[in-house]
Image 1: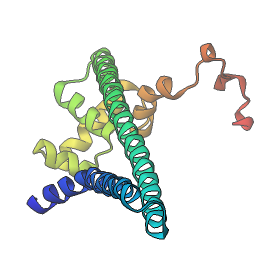
Image 2: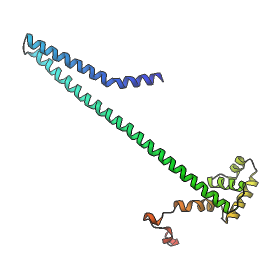
Image 3: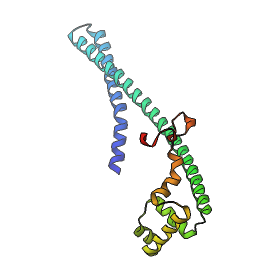
Image 4: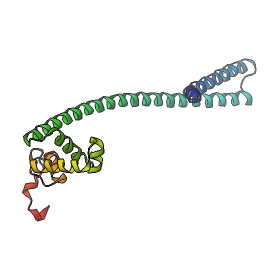
Length: 193
């Protein structure tokens, strides 16, 4: 952990240290050129130092520009992450409200079918896709009891089985609505589906 933290500090300090070094080299080269011009005038030595000054100054400004651009992009990414996190939180709240509404709707329908609490529990486990053996383990009952309660759920709901039970609750959720401009399934002939 400490190594990772220290390497993060080193990486974050890399560009500023490079900029500081290039800035000092450019400053010293400029000072040396000024001193050389005062004492001996132009020559090969001064021309090379002028080239060094130009190269380090160019490097300084290019790296500074890149560093500032990267910092700006990082700031924008942090803002995007914050915005998306807020949107995700809103979505989670909407989904939670929807799930609670769906739960209430399923509960009301099961009450209309006059299911017992045990039968409701089995019906929910059926909707979640558990096998009879898994439901028996979850409910601490025998598989035979689970199968009998499943049969009661199907009989009281007048549905043919697990698939019909799931379809009963999911059909309205998954069908496209005519309000959104989509075509309803009823418009197709059985052979066209």
